[in-house]
Structures are given as C-alpha cells and as structure tokens.
Image: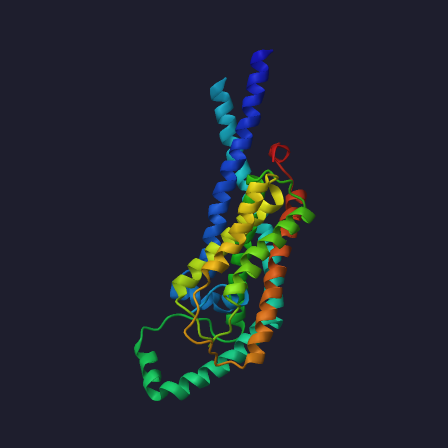
Length: 61
Length: 250
C-alpha cells in the first residue's frame, strides 16, 4: 500500500517536473525566435523583418 | 520499478515538449497571419510613406557621394518592393508571434496557471503592457528616418523594461504578500527612472502627423498581437487532443 502511494506520487511529481522542464525549453525557443525576428543584427534578418520590427515596436536602425 | 518510472517520464517529456511546440506553433501562426494582414493596411503604408521622405532627405543631404558609397558597399539581400516585401514582413511577424506564443505558454505553465482562452488573453494583455506600453513610454514606436539613440543600448533598455514590467505585474497581481507587491511596483517604475537612451535631438524626416499616426497604429497592432496570441494559445490548448494525462497536471 505504502509502496503504491509512493510510486504514484513519484509519477505525479515527475510529470510536474517534466512539464516545468519542457516549459523552460519552449521559453528558450520562443525567446530565440523573438530575438531572430526582432533584435538580430544579421543584415538579412534585419532587412526581411524591417517593417515588422517597426510595426511591432522593436528598436530598429 | 524506478527504471520503469524513469523511462515512462522520459516518454512523457518528449510528449509534453511535442504538445507545447504544437500548441505554440499553431496559436502563433493563427495570430501572426491575422496580424500580418492588419499590418498590411495599417502600419506598412505609413512606413512606405515615411521612406519617401527619408530617401528624399538622404539624397538632399549627401548627394552623389552617398549614392556611390552605397554601391561600393557589399550588396546585402533585401526584399524587393511589393509582394516579396509583404511576404517578408508576414514571415517576420509570424515568427515573432510564434515566439510570443511559446513564451506566454511557458510562463503560464511555470506559474501553474490554468490555460484557457480568456485567462490566456488576459496574460496577453499584461504582456502587451510590458513589451508595448512600458517600452513605448521611453522608446515611442518609430518611423524610418527618425533620430534615435544607440541601437544596442535601446535594445538592452527595451528587453530590461519588458522583463521588469512583466515580473512587476506578476508580483502585483498574483502574489499576496504586501512586500512583494511593493517590490513589483518598484520593478515597474525603475526602468523609467533609469530612462531610455534618447537621441541628441528629437528629429525626424517624416512629418509629425505621420509619426503620430504611426505610433498609435503600432501600439494598436502590438496590443492585438498579444491578445490574439493569448486567446489562440488558450483555444488551441483546449482543442488540441492530448496523448498523455499531462494536461491534468498542468
């Protein structure tokens, strides 16, 4: 009975931890995409995203 | 037994990430394409009009010399006017929206929030207050041809202000302890006491009337972007079928 409860708890806490870990991965990816579109100094990224950067209020030029 | 749990949790890990990516991608694209369509009839015409003034001012100032210099520099790709430029803008806006969707989803999960359309749209509104309203107080949305301070310094202030305002709003709205709330208020105010990098003189080649219209249109587009991203994240999260029981834990 005790073993059962423990292992059930372990699964629940593991999946919560897994979600937090996955959330961190997705956060990093999202920040990377925003950086690429809104902040990157690469000329090609700047030129392609120029109007979008101005429109969405990112510092430009 | 432990090994079984571990391999199960690894399988869950992949499923969770897959689901988060699918939700963010779908929601971000939905919002991004709608915003791109709006930009096409709101901010982009103003940018194009401002560029006419900018180019005229550049030619009047530098004349033939600058023209030659421009051609001497290594040519860098830029979208051709018309369809290609519209497509490039739409792609960039969609990439931004997908990025915002990932960030919003991650932050909601990290704070243990229930993800549904109304609540996620409210998170989007707070995100707009952070990246849109707070940053505009120091760095108003700019048309091409307006004077501005150092780019890296402005980007640094923008990111710092957005992060501080977001954290401050979270502390004020979601934490009960008065001391934390006070700290949140301080975080919201601090970037404006520090101040955004400003140009030596507030100049612009575009007429003030055009710049004012652009600032208002840009803020509206910014607000719509975040609220649509939020609502779409909530909607897709609810609608997308789940293979695991992770939703209950979130």
